[in-house]
Length: 283
Image 1: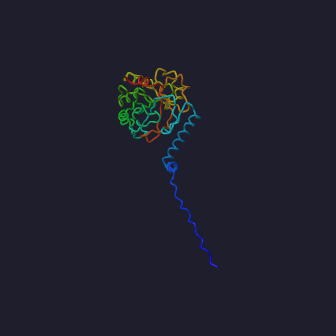
Image 2: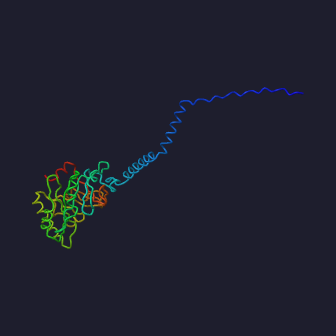
């Protein structure tokens, strides 16, 4: 008996559906997001944001009188707006253009005290270069002499003035006194008075006296109250302890990092505002 032929039914052809416009949009957006996440720029942004936030948290939880400035590598007192450095041969050859250009959140170098001489015979080998180049870059400068208490103060003042020339717009000359050099405090004060008297007669302005906080308390308090004091103190978050001192400059760190200077450098704050700073300059 013959088997009847079976008719095979053809399957309907399935047409490919065109992707909907909104699905294409989301796919495109997904690809973009993947590329962004994988991009090194994205991670750089995330890290920068995280770092800034972490710094904010650290500052918030730390001493309220200070803020950390990463580029300067130190804590800087937050209540002062005018900042400066002091330099000598110890900082080597300085690129003053880079010093002037450095800035972080409005903190920048406005002034510099530059070592000129020491004792009766020593001239700082970088003084002339620093004294020439720093003002060229808009930094206001003042020269300083390192006093040797066991040497004649007037002779030291003569030597100092033979090597420096101050003019209108400069900071007053400075005498740095921080050692006794084997003599009694009375002898040190005698030589210091001779030094400042001679310089004042020559420049018609009172020199600034630089010293450490403890040195001032031990040897100078009550003897030079009419002079502007530049005080070095790294141990206190504020200078409230020095309320009775006529200080206007505070050297609060000796470990700052500044562009253009390849060694650690002292960092200072001026107590007053810009008007007070201008009044401090030679006229």
